[in-house]
Length: 340
Ligand code: KG4
Ligand code: ZN
Image (cartoon, rainbow, N blue to C red):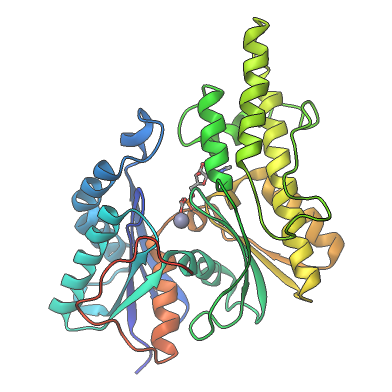
């Protein structure tokens, strides 16, 4: 008998995700997003997100099963995000996952959301080399990690953002620029027509005496807001494409420069870039160019696995099952501010 089919559930923010993985192979997954419902508020509203998870949970699990050609009885283990994330949103996923695990009589595994982002890449590119450096860039996180065996070894934080996450910076600046939410994709699209050298935005924490792997994006956000304000005061139209391209260039420059430096300093030959911001076209292009010239192998999951999804949680569950990890007790709780 091979290893069991693992159902992964993700509900930490505005995406309800379910995925099915067995032996490192993705069998099927489905995601429902409540993003449109938050758009008019300019950010995720926790109450709305939680209610949307209740609405979508069962249909999303059923859709993932249908896509995999499986039935509930085929599920051999359930993995669920326990944190970090919005508490109301996490509770819905955990309650659903517990109910499924209990009624199916299968083990339940609690999964850290960021470990899920890291594991997403294994579904397309196979097991991660040990060690590798992982850059996690999303709306809530910006971290550089040293990853060994995901199922057994603790993840080592090389650096983190000291204020805003990179995605948050995109989202907030987009709002100032009058672009729709979520801001990252909107900035990416707008930047296509712009000149990345038009505005010289700062490159925070890249000085010699600064923390080598920490990030800071709130100053960049302020600089972009000031730039927009100056145009408004002068009564000029905002050269939006140039502003978006220049902002995107600054973010991509800092992220990739530090990630490649971390690989070099730790003698690591593989960089993995994951999280929603890994979808950014300039982050991808610059990471590719810099890794190529440094002789580093770059791994980036495809767009649908970069943003929140259940397949990545199932991928961690599958690793835990195969490593013989202890399942979670059925009274396990969420950990909204879980450290990695
Ligand atoms: O990983 P994710 O779906 O959710 C978490 O935050 O955990 O990431 C969402 C973030 C948002 O801030 C969004 O603006 C950003 O990823 N994002 C992008 C792009 N696509 C999504 N940022 C820049 N360029 C993109 N193409
Ligand atoms: Zn995420």
